[in-house]
Image 1 (cartoon, protein in one colour):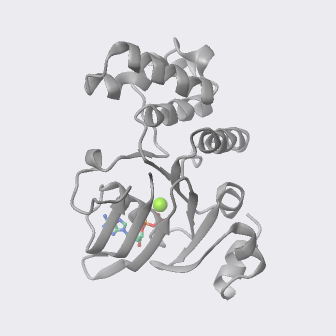
Image 2 (cartoon, rainbow, N blue to C red):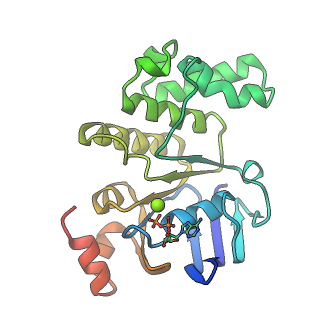
Length: 238
Ligand code: ADP
Ligand code: MG
């Protein structure tokens, strides 16, 4: 079960509060998108869920366990960033399986998981290639595959499309949607792009200045914005 709960989770950097005490519930299997303008605290919130940033207060639960003080590796999450460094000397297969190999998983099980992820992400014909022989979109899919093979309860994405051109962005966005439909896994996804948020999300969380302005299904937020900020932000052309 991959539910995520934030209770009064806050973040201060020095005197600046960048995330005000925040409550949030992500259901098991839900695709939740945090959306809002640059600097509103989306990445900081995601990094606190991942354990890459300590909370200044509050509690985080993942899959029924309090993880507030646990290392990222013990949180049952996998994070996909916009900068998806792959090992240049390794093949796609080796890149995807490397983390499992380090964890001493048997070869046959690694191969099984890599091949399953490759099938979902349309990477099967590319397993023997090296990163230099891949397009940007293909590399981003390998980075997703590397996260998938670990079978985390929760996937965390921070602007995974922002380094891709418009065509690739559509392609990778479709792959992310497919991944969610295939695995029915919980996803918390950060973007400043309204269109991305509206097309991917089961529910969107609209943030401004470290606070949640509104949470709801995309069409609900679009039709009934809670205030002028949300109306302007969601209604504005991308
Ligand atoms: P977003 O992802 O929505 O663009 P961030 O979470 O990256 O926003 O940043 C929120 C605010 O916190 C910004 O004002 C940013 O400058 C500040 N901030 C982020 N990381 C740090 C840090 N390590 N030290 C100080 N301030 C930071
Ligand atoms: Mg950010």
